[in-house]
Amino acid sequence: MTRRNLVLIGFMGTGKTTVGKLCARELDYTFCDSDAKIVRRVGKSIPEIFADEGEEAFRQYEREAIADLATQERLVVATGGGAVLDPVNAEVLRETGTVVLLTAAPFVVLRRVGDARTRPLIAFCADPKARVIALLRERRPLYERAAHFQVDTTYSSKGTVAAEIVERFLRGNEIGDESPF
Ligand code: S3P
Image (cartoon, rainbow, N blue to C red):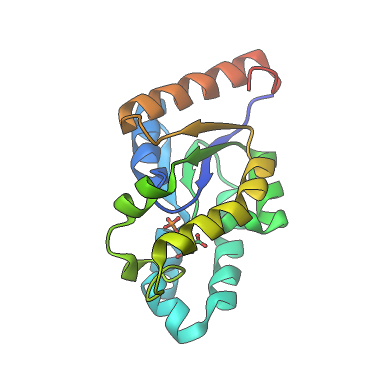
C-alpha cells in the first residue's frame, strides 16, 4: 500500500520540524507543520491561543488542521506533540500516511525546548524536568500505538535521522505492507 504522506509525531523537542523539513526536501514533498497552520488560521501564537481560549479550543483547531492535512498528498507533516493523543487524529493520520514516532531522552528534550515559555504545557511550572518526565510517561503508549515505526533522536544528528526515515518510508511503500517496520 502506498501511503500518501509522511507524518512525524512525538513529544516537543524531538526534532519533528527540523527533521521533517529535511525529509520533505529529500522526498520532494511539501513540508507542513500543524501548529504553524493553526497559528496562520487563528492569527495568534500557540501560547496566546492557550492563554486566551484555553487548551480545549486549541485541541479543536488541531483536530481541524489534522483532518484537512489528511486530505492532501505528498506532504511531510510535523504534528504538535499532543496531536495523536486524540484517537481520531491518530486514526486519520495512520490511514493516510506513514506515521513515524520521534523520541528523545528527557534531558535532550529540555535542552532543545530551551525557553519553556513558548511551550504552554511546561511554561511557568516549578519543575519543568519533572513535568516533561511525567508527560512522556503518560503519553508514550499513545505515541507508540499511533506509530508505524519509531526513531530515537537522542544521540543522532538530524541528517542521520531524516535519512533513516526516508529510507524506511520508501522501502515500506515499495514492499507494500507494514512488515519492514
Ligand atoms: C503540545 C506541543 C506543541 C503545541 C502545543 C501543545 C503538546 O507542539 O502543539 O504547545 O501537547 O505536547 P510541539 O510538539 O511542536 O512543541
